[in-house]
Length: 88
Image 1: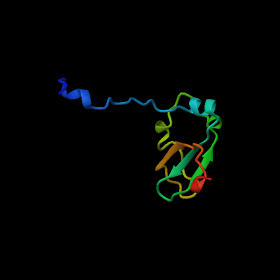
Image 2: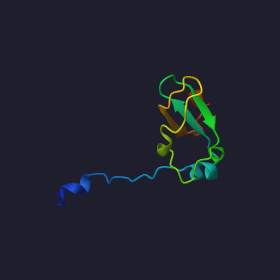
Image 3: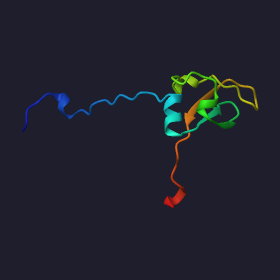
Image 4: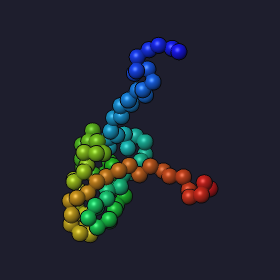
């Protein structure tokens, strides 16, 4: 049996950095803003928001106002390309 500390078998924690609007522009990815109250969502171009490009996607929470119900209970997320349903 190999001796060692108990930490040898534990996975190392990964550190993730939140993507910024500049990252989305560089990758050609739109963002979507979602209303948590009514479910409305809208596709947005990250370079047309008038928001500092170093702003991270999580920092956009509550920054948008829903055009349907007026709520500011909103969030944003990258609109990553998804594979078609059923793999094809």
